[in-house]
Amino acid sequence: MTRSPYSPQRQQAIIHALRTSGRVDAADIARRLKVTSETVRKDIIQLERQGLLRRVHGGAVPIGDLHYEPAVTTRVDYAAEKDRIATAALAHLPSSGSILIDAGSTTTRLAALLPDDRELTVFTNALPIALTLLARPHLTVFPIGGRLRSQTLATVGDWATRMLGEINVDVAFLGTNGISTDRGLTTPDPAEAAVKRLMPQAAQRRVLLADHSKVGHLSVCKHADLADIDLFITDTGLASDDLAALQATGLTVELT
View (cartoon, rainbow, N blue to C red):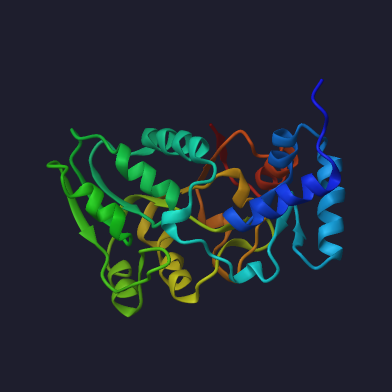
């Protein structure tokens, strides 16, 4: 019979998850450690009292997490979920026409899955996405200009916002750092938020791609209301109460 981990072992696992991914999902920790969510919740409360983290709905974040932003190259958590979300997003591609792909780990996966036989014009503010799509002969790729942020490899600044103000696309595939029923979509960097804020306005249809860990997370800069999104594609790890709360705002949620 396997012995359940002791409290110090559980708390060490929580701190390790916090340092590697910048967020603790209580349900995920409970599954991995084979303990109850209530047990993990008590451990998180204890760690918060020690000043080691800050509790949020569904888990915990580092102290000062409103400014926390992992580099795009280190975002490897929930890889399987992100792949499912990206695959589901393919069903919402136009048969031809134009799309906008926001910077982000899940949207980057979508770019890698774009079909080779479809005539599409693709606008993106993400350097990795633009480079991924260059070899596709049927795609016309327009990188959105501006200053390149090293943290996310996304373009920001006046050139980027000016270009977004002048384009119109059929579908925008969007990313975010946080999703809140009260505060909408949020992200840590003001310059990147300014670019993301214009994306819904440039598209006839707006599809948000984000794994369940983003729900309940709040960052510094708001860049959209939930009403700005037509469809939110996420994974089945989303808690039932979070799903109900999002749907109560009128947001359409697709689980994959």
